[in-house]
Every structure is written in C-alpha cells, then in structure tokens.
Picture 1: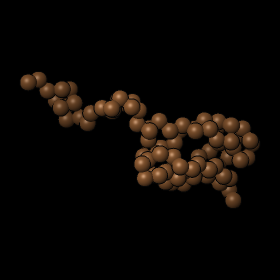
Picture 2 (picture 1 turned 45 degrees about the horizontal axis):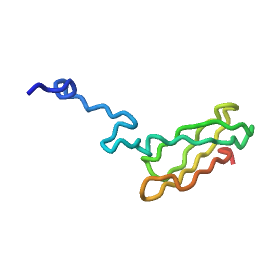
Picture 3 (picture 1 turned 60 degrees about the vertical axis):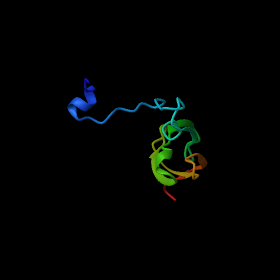
Length: 90
C-alpha cells in the first residue's frame, strides 16, 4: 500500500474550510460579521473565530485605524449568540 504524501513526510493533513465529512462548512471557520466603527461610523466586514468560544479582543478599524474592542458570546454548540463592538480607548 502506497503512503500519502502527508504520511511519507510526516506532515499533518491539511483541512480546508468546507472540507468536512458531512459536507457542511465548519461554522467556527466561516464567521464573518459586519462592524460599525464606534469612531468613524463606517461599516466594514471582519472575520471572527468562533472556535475559541466567548472572547474579547482588540481589532483596529479597517478605515480609521482606531482600536475597537470586539466582544463575542458563543453558545455551547459553538454558534454566535451575541456580538458587540465598542471603543477600545474607554
């Protein structure tokens, strides 16, 4: 039996989004949400990672570069329950 390239070189297999046994995309990898910047008011899309569960982190606005505190609440099934974007300087 011939080894796969990953097995031959001792590599971890590559998993692409949407490449699941069920055929459904992984919701943790497919998270994109629209954010209204609390500084400049412009709307932009940003990726969110639901695989880490509920979290809070700082991301700069893609338009005005001001710090925005992103707060994610993820339920037990891994789905986004709540999202909030607030000024990161207060």
